[in-house]
Image (cartoon, rainbow over all chains, first blue to last red; front, side, top):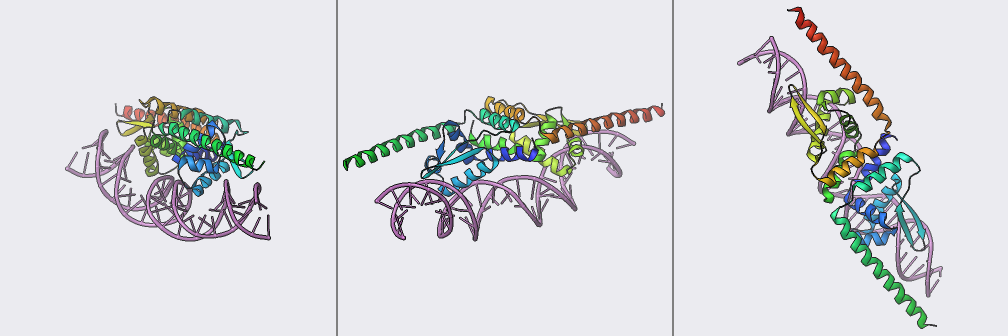
Length: 126
Length: 126
DNA sequence: TAACTATATGAGTATATGTTCATACACTAT
DNA sequence: ATAGTGTATGAACATATACTCATATAGTTA
């Protein structure tokens, strides 16, 4: 591995917002709006952090309907993967992470409720 | 662990010069001049990077005669130690690291030769 | 004490970074 | 096609960073 790549990866992790994004994505894939709601920061800001993580190869993305979903990317390069995995493993027990996971669950529940409501509404027309 | 501390530790690693310092110190303790000679950067710059690593708790230092020696510090906090150890483990196979180790050995040999020469010179007065 | 060696630090500069605001772009649904 | 939803990006700003040069400080040796 080149030192430049190692530095880029480490820099990717060296920010509160990105650390929290990485933690959340290590649990499950999420779209920009969900991350925006959980983290409280502006949509613009979240999007830029995601772009940076994507360019570094830490996360990948794909579109699903309206939304762009992000997930932790598995690098082909063995050394890159090793470094990323090692850092994530070393980051356990961050207190704020637990709070974010709680928020994540709240958001997901609200989404489910919203979808159910929509379906009921749609059914009214049947 | 607090996210601030995690960020500080990760930032400490997110720089080429500091990465190389950490790699060298993970092999053996070294003083400022030795690091300065191996890495080629200015003494002032090396000293500042070491100060930063010291403040973050990644390295420790002690004086021995003329010199201040630095070494990888073992943090008391288990989570801190886990993170630092994980990153160092993940950083294996960095190409430039091997070159630095070669330089390290050269410097150490030159030091030994210099000391021998000094002793011989001193003996001439006997 | 004075000269010397090793290390640390302040000033100054160029560059990078994180953030917000506004707006452009991509896609969907009516 | 047009309105609406979700995402990305450019401009602007404040702050942080890495570096060099010069100088101060700490400790050693003659």
